[in-house]
Image (tube, rainbow over all chains, first blue to last red; front, side, top):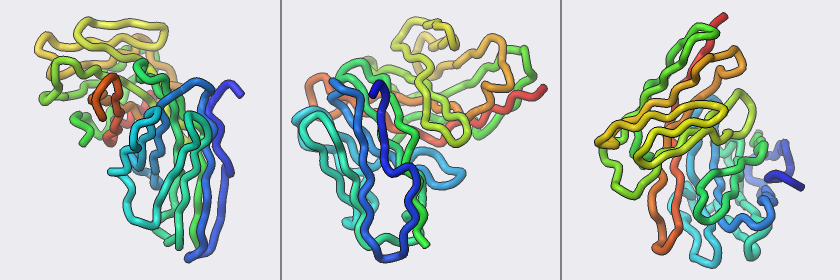
Length: 113
Length: 114
């Protein structure tokens, strides 16, 4: 597709379950970001992938969070043993290496009961 | 660290110019200023970016002070659909080479009133 695609768009899970969120960036975009946005709050940086460089994981809030990216394509954000405070919209964005303009997906809304 | 400071919120009358300020006093010489906005329940949308010179596109104008410690985003004729959170961001180098990272702050909630 032409834009950044995220799935699922909505996910409801029980506390303690693991969840996987998927991001398909725009083809050719070398940079990929994950952000978290809690209700009524700003964007919280989680992780950044840039080409073949080691990812910047400095924003991951705990070791329950992890992310992978296959080459310069799909990325998966995994949250293990989910907690209620993990409830948020998880946004993925991609960009060309030097242009810097981020293109965002519509997000995956996670609700942990 | 977003390296920027913005107003929490501001109002503007429909049809008037909206001027959104941003402070970035610790910006370095090669760091660009970017503006994005987020309309309720949507992903953020790119607006404009600049380094030293003022910039204009079909959406907005960006005025950067000579010392680059602050900037102003101008929406020349605000409409109700411009109601959104506006984020001012400094693009910082990361990891060497030509890699960069964008870190969002809390943004300014602009409310355009009829």
